[in-house]
Image (cartoon, rainbow, N blue to C red):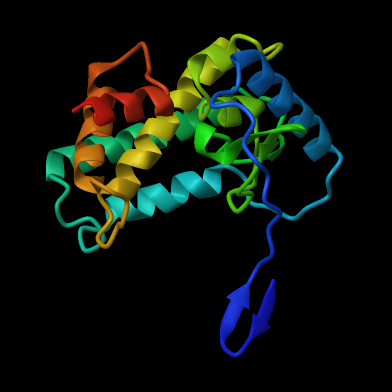
Length: 204
């Protein structure tokens, strides 16, 4: 980060895209390599539960989420709390994670897949990262706990739902997204992935 004349500037390397889409195998292998590297990194970071707390704070404060109906506020608050408890009680091994390795944060380059946007790094089970990836990717990642992955997918849906109801949220079609993510939680399993939700909303 460089600061000059009141501007903060970061310098990025441009990578020419080489293919329109990564295969699920390439995606999973790249994420597995990333996780292996992150296990060796000594970087101060919050646990994934800090992300849950951020979402809970939005839901708990009507001034921060004034358009969220009271019944949905109770529902979403309860779901966030129960998922936090269920995931922590599993006692899964935790490590440094990307935090949001969804397709929008993966570049396809001549050097292979590269992950970007590490602002959401946190510590947690690898299933928390995989909950942000397309479903087919998870089928190629070794030794996943499917039960934990399902809980993490629910958690991601609940956190995103909370953030879309926050006053001042600038996400495009944020209210539409907030309603859709709440419906997905009410509908129950199988739990859709983020890319599935985005495709559904894009088709509307």
